[in-house]
Amino acid sequence: MTIRPFLISIAGALLVAMIAFIGGTYSGGPMAAQMDRVAQAVVAKSGGAPIKARFTTRGGWPTRHPLLSGGEDVDEATRAKVAEAVASIPGVGGVSWADGSMVAESNVVPLTPMHCQEDVEALLQARTVRFEESSSAIDASSQELLDEVAAALRPCLGSIIAITGHTDSSGPEPGNLALSQLRALAVERALIDRGIPNDGLRARGMGSRVQVEGLLPTDPANRRIEFSVIATVPLAPTPVDTPGPR
Image (cartoon, rainbow, N blue to C red; front, side):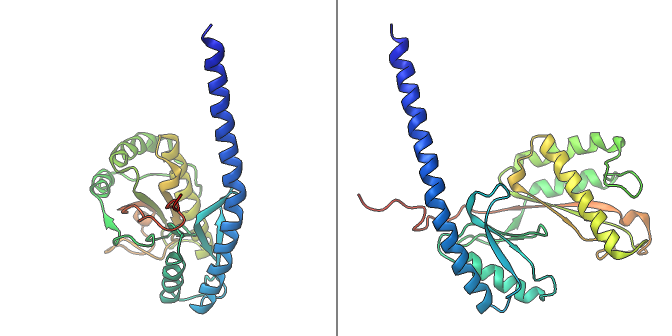
């Protein structure tokens, strides 16, 4: 006879959760819109007018972690200035670029490398993540290596894990850039399949711009995947996060 009250309490909890979710969605929309307006003004003032800040996720949900895009021809100093300005807006969390590069969250200490990067680099000293020729399909021989890479990264979950693809200089650079991006994304998907959360992964292709020191630009050894593991300190509470007085 105690089952019915139990079911009623469960149903009540679900109803409260649903109301909270709907309320968060409706209140989050205006918040994201306000942040978007402020961000565009900040971007223009920082000299990065072509750059846009998006306060919605890929699924269209409002978020306080903006994605910056555009301004590919803007110099790096201006890009950094714009990103820092957007990160300083009250209530804004982590800022990232659409090309995969990261910006430190507002009110946090500088990003620092973590030991997991050294562990992964040790795995990649003798072996590399291989792909089928002129393709982003990961070669079957590299699956075991990716298992080991995922295991080495697991102790540092909660950090930002950057995955960078590189090519040699053979072929036109636009094609190299696109292929390196696709290969970085393929490795990102492989790590997600192995239990690495996707919200901490950042995939980026560099084409042939960054070669291995001491090698000719056309050397096949320049075709590689590199990992950077950086730790962040959680955001300090902001007026958006902290409940007001009752």
